[in-house]
Image (cartoon, helix red, strand yellow):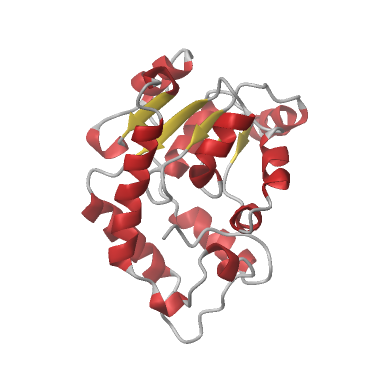
Length: 221
């Protein structure tokens, strides 16, 4: 109860101009990162597939205006807008979440898709699907997903190669936790167990909403 009240009050206060963007692809521990941000007291914004559709249509102003209202971010659409967010919010920091290897990423992605029947004939495309992905759900190409994962991580590292103070790269599976994150954010460790999270329970709720016209994350290509 107290946690819910604190969260509501946090949403009412003005957001700081300094932002922290999680820019790892979905299925790389973004939910865990979001839980960390909230535990550290930030005004947090997670995925929004409606905003992702707008960003994919190059309608960036509403997305950037939404970002101005919050302090920390992860998942869609934030991960693929790191250049634009860096320009709009100078002085921000960025966290790139990784899986231990590309096979772990693909395994997680495939299980996620199987859970929601992506290739079933009765799969109902959410309203944002065509804008975000632009291909039929049953034609998902996992080899392209692997390339996209590696290309994204390489591009992020290249973009920040001369700005090591602005980018933190973490892999929860390899043992990263509160220490590197709190040092990077100049925050004291909360002294609590690290909140390893699994997105399945959240997506189970969110996807049922998406089918009726709201937002949910089926995942990144």
